[in-house]
Image (cartoon, rainbow, N blue to C red; front, side, top):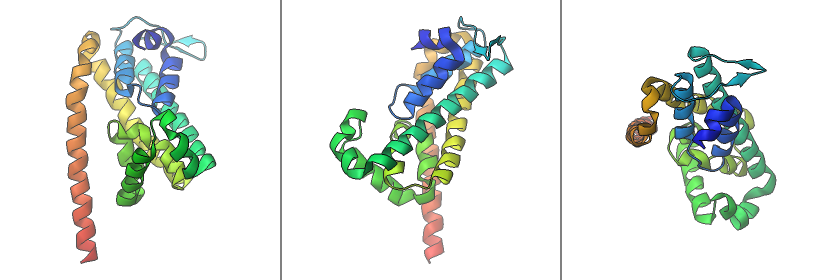
Length: 206
């Protein structure tokens, strides 16, 4: 996968992140490698409409944007699948994309709990982010809101991890360990945010 990203640059990032929107294929590492390419730490010459991008900010932006848009396209495809086939088909055949009945039930509880925030928070949560797309279509998440929240969440994710790869540079091979720490921090932050939302909802009801 690293070789694919280093060799094909923007196209590889776009395609892999589109897949990551439906199946967890290591979106964090993909974007970290993309950032390392932007820093010149990994061999590769990203192309954009026939032009070769030089190392630096323009390559970082192009690769991070490619990851964001790729993830958005994959997410829209997942929403369309869920919307088109319905809950019964997903329950019967969802295991093919790691969405068996038990996982769909958890997804339903996630959407019931967080409502409008479910998509955005899901896009920022490790592992959960790859299992939001199809359930969103199944549960009738409005397309416009779904698109905006997905775009926002995926942009934060892609630009952050690409920035991490750019900052670390040639030491990107060690970033796989660092991402676990970062993911833990993200989870802690999301839990704190969740507590804040629950507390505010409780006060509102009172």
